[in-house]
Amino acid sequence: MIRRLWNSTARSPRVSWAAFRPSAFCSRFGFETLSAAALFCGPLLLLLSVSLACRAGGLRDAEIAMPSGWSRFRLEPAPSNATGSFGIFDPSFARAAADDPIYMAYSTVSPSYRWPTEHPHVVQTRIAVSTDGGQSFVGLGDRANAAFDEPDHNLDRDLFGRSPPVTWQHEVSSIVYVPQAPVEERWQLFWHQYPLIDGDRRFELGWIAHKAAATPAEFHSRRATKYFVGGAYDPVRADAYDGSPRIALNELHGDLVGCVAFTEPGAFIFENRLFLVLHCADGQQPANGRIVLLEKTPAAGDAGISAGSGGWSYRGTLLDNLRDAALLDNGSDFTGFGAPDLFHIEATGHIYLVVTPTRPRRHPGYRGCMVFRVLDLDTARLQRDGMTPRLAAVSNGDRELHSGGCAYLDVRGPSSTLIQGQVYPKSVDRFRLFRTEVRL
Image 1 (cartoon, rainbow, N blue to C red):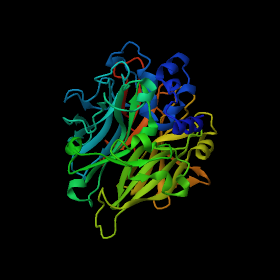
Image 2: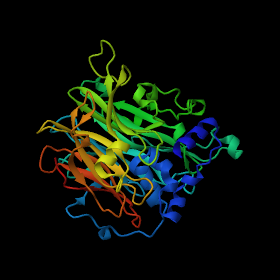
Image 3: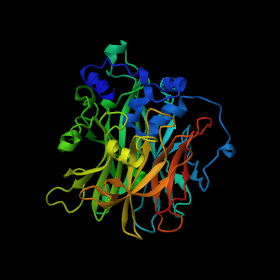
Image 4: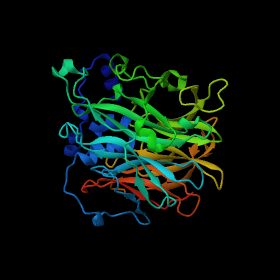
């Protein structure tokens, strides 16, 4: 159904996305109407569709139940709105050196300033820092990527007879420190940017974006680059915003031809090599694509990895959603994977991939987190028993709630842990992060 939707979208802007509004989910309590959200936006977008649209009374913080062994993730409320109106999700961690502060990129959820009724749950990127070894984080003053309302535009004007409400939002961000890049580009940020138009998520007008800065505190003042798009990208309308994309990833390699969109970027630096793991969405539900790996290739004569030079190489598929979900679960509990991220444990030298198992047509749609060891980055090869990926760790979370979107907080000590998001539909701060105490 998703492929048919995208094909019709490419032909005409008159495709209605109303069937994918979160209110439809709340009335049906099923995922059939949310497959478009499941296609593109991993934990945060689908969980937004589920929990924020079901506007229930708020539980007090003390009433929030956690799985056994979990503890609260501490993000201090200063500065104002560092946690958003509805909470936080999608963490990503990086530091320059072992004893340096740890920086976290994360998503906050708040209403649109101009159109709070049409767009009550807008996502933007913030940065926080920890100076106590990851025990707590404090938000930096300015948003790294601020959502913005666009009152005067031509998008879908022919449909509405006016300029409909448009809000550009930024989600599933990933932060990375690249020591061999030029000084002014050593901190880099990747994320998914796309517009909400009159309440509908328009992924054919979005892209994977990128920023580079000397420090994370400077991201807010840096201009974003329209970096990657997939096969469903609509250049006729979307190129009016920041020009043409740098790379059409569906044209980079034959394996990527069927990727209608890319989302959930996870940046990773290892031995002076910059990698990016992505969810290639092909629209074939319920598995919906693959988890793929790219590597930045410096330009000729470039000693570092400049954000503005060189290209990207396709390294391979880490997980095939249809095949590997069947091997691990036989489709009974989940049908695919999303929210990929890579991390390295310095003590052992091992590299790991963490993903969220997904089942987009059932509730809850996110089934915790799974961790796999990566044996070879050059060929995107996981450790397997025969054909089956070998699990290195699992964090289930609450099986009755949407739970996932993990990142590993490595502090090179006993406080290292997998950080996991979980959604509480009856809480005011519905989106929350927790320390799972899962360690590798």
